[in-house]
Image (tube, rainbow, N blue to C red; front, side, top):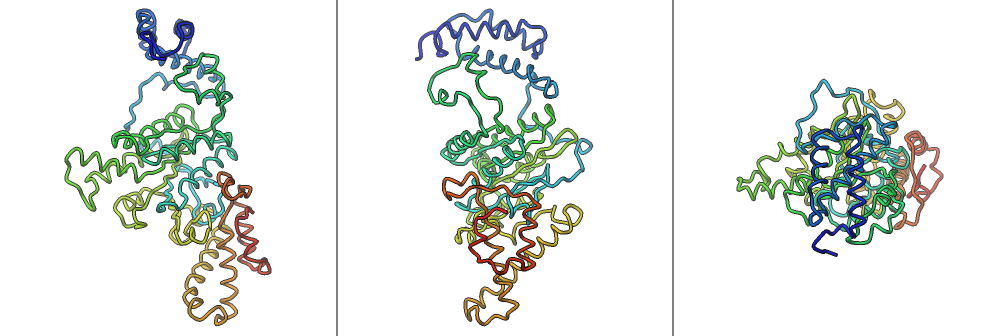
Length: 454
């Protein structure tokens, strides 16, 4: 109800916010600097009833949140940055602050951990055209990090569908990643909550969501990535946490930059993109680093226009990435999900200095068998399987089993597959593929490996 006084609700509830914030501001030990204390106290003192509404409601909630963070001070590092105003645009960290330790990041997805292992504090690109499952892979990774590792994740929805953002939010509530004790009441419109209701929100949520979807202006869509990175830097530097940030979709960030460039009247560059393409991409990629305080690991879904990896937008991102996971339409057509292409997907971590000798040997053997199978497919199509040598028949049989074993049931896709999701550790992944490679499972049928965990 929008009356002449306020839209907070009734006057009693408004007075409740005022009283609680005033009590908090009068406490000399509260976590707010003197300038903010003077400004907020003056606002509470001089604002008249006709303007007591959204303005002081915002400041009272901010004060209550500061009180809540102060209460949690025994568990985390004292927060000295919250009272400071932080710009979303920031220069990258100095080299002396960066960490040089490379740690393997276990995702629980077999094909990723085996063939394209991720590095903690690195940048990972998830390439794929429309409908190949980029968002589903990201949702599964968020679920695995939150449930299996208990880590904190940030999700930046950049220029994608509003429906997908709403579905993601609801599914995270269902899976417990976002946890609220009074979630049903939050569906009511135009209702502002008392302090008791505010504190009834469960603080066990393990993900923060930032959205600037495709219905927003290009300026808003372009800034969402910077906002999410500023949040991630806060958790890393102030609370000293390892943070995982998901950006869906980085291509939309560049697309929004192209629209802004056009509105500014700049001359377009190659294929119609903005002339500042590389600079804009570097402004967010160079902030995703691991420091001595904590790390920011980024997994970025990247839309590939017309499945063309040579397009300037995907090409400019390649130079910043530590690992590349490419989704294949051919594998998706075979209903093999996640449809990760084992040949185009690469990682800097897949080397003897970063992974075990057994891991490297099994990953190399899997790629060799799949490559040989790819070479024999034309022969099989023309002459048939009977014309192959016995050795090639064995390779084809193992390759088909490997191809199906690279699929995996996802927890977030249980509603579609009706199959229980599976989290597979790296040791289980290596052991399972080693059995197929060395021939221990040659007597098993191909169907026994499809959509299985370990």
